[in-house]
Image (cartoon, rainbow, N blue to C red; front, side):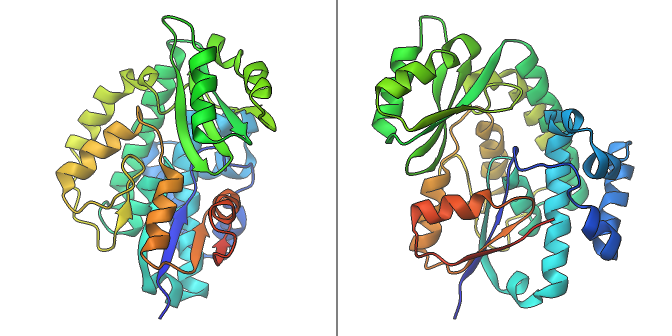
Length: 303
Protein backbone atom coordinates (compact mmCIF):
# COMPACT_ATOMS: atom_id res chain seq x y z
CA UNK A 1 0.00 0.00 0.00
CA UNK A 2 1.29 3.47 -0.90
CA UNK A 3 2.56 5.71 1.86
CA UNK A 4 1.89 9.17 0.48
CA UNK A 5 3.47 12.41 1.72
CA UNK A 6 2.32 15.90 0.80
CA UNK A 7 4.90 18.69 0.47
CA UNK A 8 4.16 22.42 0.57
CA UNK A 9 6.40 25.11 -0.99
CA UNK A 10 7.99 28.10 0.69
CA UNK A 11 8.80 31.68 -0.18
CA UNK A 12 10.18 32.13 -3.69
CA UNK A 13 7.54 29.93 -5.35
CA UNK A 14 5.13 32.83 -5.78
CA UNK A 15 4.15 34.13 -9.23
CA UNK A 16 1.60 36.70 -10.32
CA UNK A 17 -1.56 34.93 -11.44
CA UNK A 18 -1.28 32.05 -8.99
CA UNK A 19 -4.58 30.82 -7.61
CA UNK A 20 -6.75 32.58 -10.18
CA UNK A 21 -7.79 29.49 -12.16
CA UNK A 22 -8.60 27.55 -8.99
CA UNK A 23 -10.58 30.43 -7.50
CA UNK A 24 -12.60 30.76 -10.70
CA UNK A 25 -13.32 27.06 -11.09
CA UNK A 26 -13.50 25.67 -7.55
CA UNK A 27 -15.85 27.15 -4.93
CA UNK A 28 -13.80 25.68 -2.05
CA UNK A 29 -10.73 27.54 -3.31
CA UNK A 30 -12.65 30.79 -3.80
CA UNK A 31 -13.90 30.45 -0.22
CA UNK A 32 -10.33 30.40 1.09
CA UNK A 33 -9.57 33.74 -0.56
CA UNK A 34 -12.79 35.20 0.84
CA UNK A 35 -11.94 33.96 4.33
CA UNK A 36 -8.41 35.31 3.93
CA UNK A 37 -9.74 38.78 3.12
CA UNK A 38 -11.80 38.70 6.32
CA UNK A 39 -8.72 37.75 8.37
CA UNK A 40 -6.19 40.03 6.72
CA UNK A 41 -8.34 43.08 6.03
CA UNK A 42 -7.19 43.37 2.41
CA UNK A 43 -7.93 41.57 -0.87
CA UNK A 44 -5.25 38.87 -1.04
CA UNK A 45 -6.81 37.47 -4.22
CA UNK A 46 -6.13 40.78 -6.00
CA UNK A 47 -2.45 40.62 -4.99
CA UNK A 48 -2.12 36.97 -6.08
CA UNK A 49 -3.99 37.33 -9.36
CA UNK A 50 -2.79 40.74 -10.54
CA UNK A 51 0.30 41.65 -8.52
CA UNK A 52 2.27 43.73 -9.22
CA UNK A 53 5.20 41.36 -8.81
CA UNK A 54 7.07 43.79 -6.56
CA UNK A 55 4.17 43.71 -4.11
CA UNK A 56 3.63 39.95 -4.27
CA UNK A 57 7.37 39.34 -3.76
CA UNK A 58 7.36 41.38 -0.54
CA UNK A 59 7.66 39.09 2.48
CA UNK A 60 4.58 40.72 4.02
CA UNK A 61 2.40 39.60 1.11
CA UNK A 62 4.18 36.55 -0.32
CA UNK A 63 3.92 34.48 2.85
CA UNK A 64 0.12 34.76 3.27
CA UNK A 65 -0.28 34.43 -0.51
CA UNK A 66 1.66 31.17 -0.73
CA UNK A 67 -0.10 29.79 2.35
CA UNK A 68 -3.57 30.42 0.89
CA UNK A 69 -2.70 29.38 -2.67
CA UNK A 70 -1.16 26.12 -1.47
CA UNK A 71 -4.28 25.33 0.52
CA UNK A 72 -6.37 26.21 -2.55
CA UNK A 73 -4.30 23.66 -4.48
CA UNK A 74 -5.01 21.20 -1.67
CA UNK A 75 -8.75 21.77 -2.23
CA UNK A 76 -8.16 20.93 -5.89
CA UNK A 77 -6.40 17.72 -4.88
CA UNK A 78 -9.32 16.81 -2.60
CA UNK A 79 -11.75 17.42 -5.46
CA UNK A 80 -9.84 15.59 -8.20
CA UNK A 81 -7.90 12.91 -6.30
CA UNK A 82 -9.59 12.57 -2.91
CA UNK A 83 -7.85 9.29 -2.23
CA UNK A 84 -4.42 10.98 -2.33
CA UNK A 85 -5.34 13.57 0.30
CA UNK A 86 -7.16 11.00 2.43
CA UNK A 87 -4.33 8.45 2.37
CA UNK A 88 -1.43 10.82 3.06
CA UNK A 89 0.60 9.45 5.95
CA UNK A 90 3.04 12.36 6.46
CA UNK A 91 3.67 15.92 5.40
CA UNK A 92 6.33 18.63 5.35
CA UNK A 93 6.70 22.19 4.14
CA UNK A 94 9.72 24.27 3.20
CA UNK A 95 10.09 27.09 5.74
CA UNK A 96 6.77 28.97 5.40
CA UNK A 97 5.30 25.74 3.98
CA UNK A 98 5.59 24.10 7.40
CA UNK A 99 2.61 26.19 8.51
CA UNK A 100 0.61 24.93 5.52
CA UNK A 101 1.58 21.37 6.43
CA UNK A 102 0.39 21.91 10.01
CA UNK A 103 -2.99 23.09 8.72
CA UNK A 104 -3.26 20.01 6.49
CA UNK A 105 -2.39 17.85 9.52
CA UNK A 106 -5.17 19.61 11.48
CA UNK A 107 -2.81 20.92 14.15
CA UNK A 108 -3.77 24.54 13.37
CA UNK A 109 -6.93 25.99 11.81
CA UNK A 110 -6.85 27.88 8.52
CA UNK A 111 -7.66 31.20 10.17
CA UNK A 112 -5.11 30.79 12.95
CA UNK A 113 -2.47 29.61 10.50
CA UNK A 114 -3.09 32.64 8.29
CA UNK A 115 -2.82 35.03 11.24
CA UNK A 116 0.48 33.41 12.22
CA UNK A 117 1.86 33.54 8.69
CA UNK A 118 0.88 37.20 8.31
CA UNK A 119 2.60 38.08 11.59
CA UNK A 120 5.63 35.98 10.63
CA UNK A 121 5.96 37.73 7.28
CA UNK A 122 5.61 41.17 8.86
CA UNK A 123 8.08 40.37 11.64
CA UNK A 124 10.66 38.92 9.24
CA UNK A 125 10.35 41.94 6.95
CA UNK A 126 10.84 44.27 9.92
CA UNK A 127 13.93 42.32 10.99
CA UNK A 128 15.28 42.44 7.44
CA UNK A 129 14.79 46.21 7.30
CA UNK A 130 17.15 46.69 10.25
CA UNK A 131 20.33 45.67 8.44
CA UNK A 132 21.33 45.08 4.77
CA UNK A 133 21.35 41.32 4.32
CA UNK A 134 20.43 38.58 1.88
CA UNK A 135 20.77 35.00 0.69
CA UNK A 136 22.89 33.27 -1.96
CA UNK A 137 22.34 29.83 -3.47
CA UNK A 138 25.57 27.91 -4.06
CA UNK A 139 25.39 25.14 -6.66
CA UNK A 140 27.81 22.29 -7.10
CA UNK A 141 29.59 22.18 -3.74
CA UNK A 142 29.17 19.78 -0.84
CA UNK A 143 28.28 20.93 2.66
CA UNK A 144 31.87 21.11 3.98
CA UNK A 145 33.04 23.22 1.06
CA UNK A 146 30.09 25.60 1.41
CA UNK A 147 30.91 25.96 5.09
CA UNK A 148 34.49 26.80 4.13
CA UNK A 149 33.19 29.44 1.69
CA UNK A 150 31.18 31.00 4.52
CA UNK A 151 34.20 31.00 6.83
CA UNK A 152 36.40 32.70 4.20
CA UNK A 153 33.81 35.27 3.10
CA UNK A 154 32.73 36.27 6.60
CA UNK A 155 34.63 39.11 8.26
CA UNK A 156 34.64 39.97 11.99
CA UNK A 157 31.24 41.23 13.13
CA UNK A 158 29.41 39.74 10.15
CA UNK A 159 26.91 36.90 9.93
CA UNK A 160 27.24 34.43 7.05
CA UNK A 161 26.08 30.86 7.48
CA UNK A 162 24.34 27.96 5.83
CA UNK A 163 20.60 28.66 5.87
CA UNK A 164 19.01 25.94 3.72
CA UNK A 165 20.26 22.38 3.18
CA UNK A 166 18.09 21.79 0.10
CA UNK A 167 19.64 18.82 -1.69
CA UNK A 168 23.08 17.57 -2.74
CA UNK A 169 24.81 20.39 -4.58
CA UNK A 170 22.21 23.04 -3.73
CA UNK A 171 22.85 24.87 -0.48
CA UNK A 172 21.73 28.38 0.42
CA UNK A 173 23.81 30.67 2.61
CA UNK A 174 22.53 33.76 4.34
CA UNK A 175 23.97 36.81 6.06
CA UNK A 176 25.06 40.44 5.83
CA UNK A 177 25.03 41.90 2.32
CA UNK A 178 28.74 42.74 2.53
CA UNK A 179 29.57 39.08 3.20
CA UNK A 180 27.16 37.81 0.54
CA UNK A 181 28.89 39.98 -2.05
CA UNK A 182 32.18 38.15 -1.46
CA UNK A 183 30.62 34.73 -1.97
CA UNK A 184 30.59 34.38 -5.79
CA UNK A 185 34.35 34.79 -6.26
CA UNK A 186 35.23 32.59 -3.29
CA UNK A 187 32.71 29.89 -4.27
CA UNK A 188 33.94 29.87 -7.87
CA UNK A 189 37.50 29.43 -6.65
CA UNK A 190 36.27 26.48 -4.54
CA UNK A 191 34.75 24.82 -7.62
CA UNK A 192 31.11 25.91 -7.48
CA UNK A 193 29.15 25.58 -10.72
CA UNK A 194 27.17 28.74 -10.04
CA UNK A 195 25.98 31.15 -7.39
CA UNK A 196 22.60 32.89 -7.45
CA UNK A 197 21.69 35.91 -5.35
CA UNK A 198 18.12 35.26 -4.18
CA UNK A 199 15.38 37.88 -4.40
CA UNK A 200 14.48 37.91 -0.71
CA UNK A 201 14.21 40.70 1.83
CA UNK A 202 16.97 39.57 4.15
CA UNK A 203 19.05 36.87 5.82
CA UNK A 204 16.31 34.40 6.68
CA UNK A 205 17.15 31.45 8.92
CA UNK A 206 20.05 33.19 10.65
CA UNK A 207 20.48 35.14 13.91
CA UNK A 208 19.80 38.34 11.92
CA UNK A 209 16.13 37.34 12.17
CA UNK A 210 16.30 37.42 16.00
CA UNK A 211 14.17 40.60 16.18
CA UNK A 212 11.27 38.55 14.76
CA UNK A 213 11.46 35.96 17.53
CA UNK A 214 9.59 37.93 20.19
CA UNK A 215 6.70 38.83 17.89
CA UNK A 216 6.34 35.28 16.63
CA UNK A 217 6.59 33.85 20.16
CA UNK A 218 3.80 36.15 21.28
CA UNK A 219 1.60 35.27 18.29
CA UNK A 220 2.09 31.53 18.78
CA UNK A 221 1.26 31.79 22.49
CA UNK A 222 -2.26 32.87 21.60
CA UNK A 223 -2.96 30.18 18.98
CA UNK A 224 -4.39 26.77 19.91
CA UNK A 225 -2.26 23.94 18.52
CA UNK A 226 -3.34 20.30 18.57
CA UNK A 227 -1.20 17.20 18.08
CA UNK A 228 -1.01 16.66 14.30
CA UNK A 229 -3.10 13.76 12.98
CA UNK A 230 -0.15 12.66 10.81
CA UNK A 231 3.59 13.32 11.21
CA UNK A 232 4.74 16.81 10.23
CA UNK A 233 8.50 16.90 9.72
CA UNK A 234 10.08 19.96 11.33
CA UNK A 235 12.53 22.08 9.34
CA UNK A 236 14.66 22.60 12.45
CA UNK A 237 15.48 19.02 13.44
CA UNK A 238 13.99 16.86 10.64
CA UNK A 239 11.77 15.06 13.16
CA UNK A 240 8.03 14.93 13.77
CA UNK A 241 6.54 16.22 17.03
CA UNK A 242 3.21 15.63 18.79
CA UNK A 243 3.62 18.03 21.71
CA UNK A 244 2.07 21.45 20.91
CA UNK A 245 4.61 23.13 23.19
CA UNK A 246 7.47 21.63 21.15
CA UNK A 247 5.78 22.63 17.90
CA UNK A 248 5.49 26.25 19.07
CA UNK A 249 9.14 26.30 20.15
CA UNK A 250 10.33 24.85 16.84
CA UNK A 251 8.27 27.29 14.75
CA UNK A 252 9.99 30.14 16.57
CA UNK A 253 13.42 28.54 16.19
CA UNK A 254 12.78 27.99 12.50
CA UNK A 255 13.23 31.69 11.62
CA UNK A 256 16.77 31.77 13.06
CA UNK A 257 17.84 28.17 12.31
CA UNK A 258 18.93 26.40 9.10
CA UNK A 259 16.23 24.58 7.15
CA UNK A 260 17.16 20.89 7.05
CA UNK A 261 15.15 20.04 3.95
CA UNK A 262 17.39 17.30 2.56
CA UNK A 263 17.44 15.59 5.97
CA UNK A 264 13.66 15.92 6.19
CA UNK A 265 13.19 14.25 2.81
CA UNK A 266 15.53 11.43 3.78
CA UNK A 267 13.49 10.87 6.95
CA UNK A 268 10.37 10.51 4.81
CA UNK A 269 12.15 8.21 2.38
CA UNK A 270 13.29 6.05 5.30
CA UNK A 271 9.65 5.88 6.41
CA UNK A 272 8.92 4.22 3.06
CA UNK A 273 7.12 7.20 1.55
CA UNK A 274 6.12 6.90 -2.09
CA UNK A 275 4.82 8.80 -3.91
CA UNK A 276 5.38 12.42 -2.89
CA UNK A 277 2.92 15.13 -3.92
CA UNK A 278 3.94 18.79 -4.15
CA UNK A 279 0.89 20.94 -3.41
CA UNK A 280 1.04 24.61 -4.39
CA UNK A 281 2.80 26.99 -6.78
CA UNK A 282 5.80 25.76 -8.76
CA UNK A 283 7.74 22.51 -9.08
CA UNK A 284 10.82 23.30 -6.99
CA UNK A 285 10.27 20.63 -4.34
CA UNK A 286 9.93 17.88 -6.94
CA UNK A 287 13.19 18.99 -8.48
CA UNK A 288 14.95 18.86 -5.13
CA UNK A 289 13.55 15.39 -4.48
CA UNK A 290 15.00 14.09 -7.74
CA UNK A 291 18.42 15.38 -6.68
CA UNK A 292 18.06 13.50 -3.37
CA UNK A 293 16.76 10.27 -4.92
CA UNK A 294 16.33 10.18 -8.70
CA UNK A 295 14.09 7.09 -8.48
CA UNK A 296 11.51 8.70 -6.19
CA UNK A 297 7.95 9.02 -7.50
CA UNK A 298 6.68 12.59 -7.31
CA UNK A 299 3.64 14.41 -8.65
CA UNK A 300 1.95 17.68 -7.90
CA UNK A 301 -1.04 20.00 -7.99
CA UNK A 302 -0.13 23.54 -9.00
CA UNK A 303 -2.17 26.71 -8.83
